[in-house]
Amino acid sequence: MDAESVRTDLVVAAAAAGSTVVLVIAFAVALPTEPRFYLQSAPLSVYFVYILIHRKLPDSVDQPASWAGLAMIAAIVAFGIAAL
Image (tube, rainbow, N blue to C red; front, side):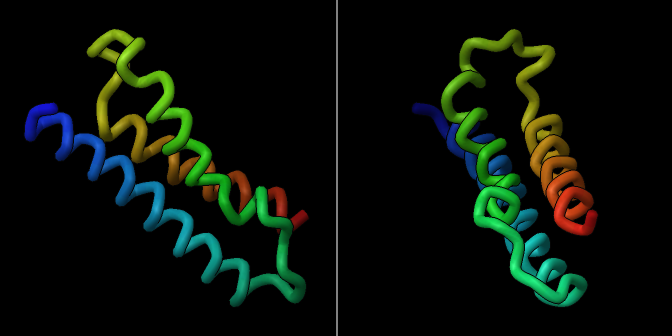
């Protein structure tokens, strides 16, 4: 395991964790009821998928910025679903 791999994993993990925290805070502020756990943890599911498949993808697709963006998109979609 090299330093670049660790840095990449930390970037994706930080984006998923940060998106989850922001999502939970947004739920607490904007919604009168607490949404289900699977909606609150939607960005973390992106990180788990990353852990399972990122080494099997080509380097052109497997970029930390792509995974971080996907975690943020998952948070936005989860918030949209909960707001409906």
